Length: 116
Length: 114
Image 1 (spheres, rainbow over the protein chains, first blue to last red):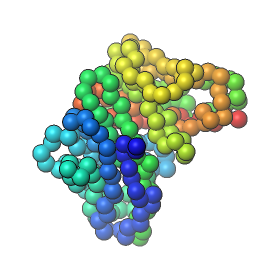
Image 2 (cartoon, helix red, strand yellow):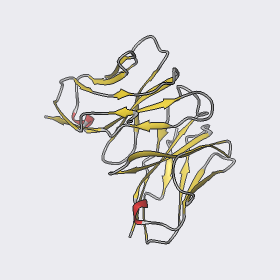
Image 3 (cartoon, one colour):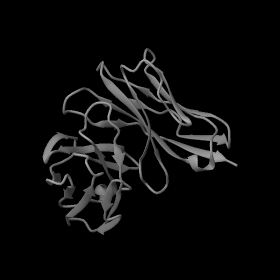
Image 4 (spheres, rainbow over the protein chains, first blue to last red):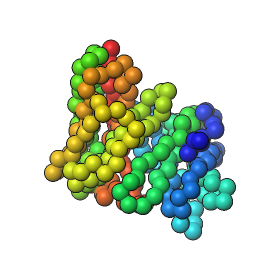
């Protein structure tokens, strides 16, 4: 079974509009972390936002917010006031467990295109 | 503060050769992880190093190996290259690799195997 599912291969949004990128996850571990990364065509993975499984409030980082619905196992990324520079591939990722056995499991990504 | 630096940026090799990729983490970061990104398989975890010790390893054959030096710089080596090894190899660093830490990635090394 997929641990991280991103069902939108591609999304279009008008400049200055808000957009939501979907992410659902699957884990039986009570302790986990959810990440969103942006990958422009240059290849670098840019950290956007992090949500811990025990965090009571939804994470926010500037124009990025994470809509965390634990019971539904979803962690959607919301980008407000889209900019042309937001056009990129976006990956949702999960880190499970405590201790030394940690790694990120990534979804397949969503290609976001911001239209002028 | 300098980011994660990966060298070289591009590599072209032929089947059967071996290759070594280098990663310099952010200053003060002691955990370094490696990921392989391909169009077909997406992003897959290779291994993680902390204080010169491999802490975790993904599901890759033994041809893929790595090490970490005392200054936290890391190298990964792929021996007997196969066409399927063509990929973007990304390195990520974090302070200690503990829960909640952000991972910072480099720009990657694009390996092409001919």
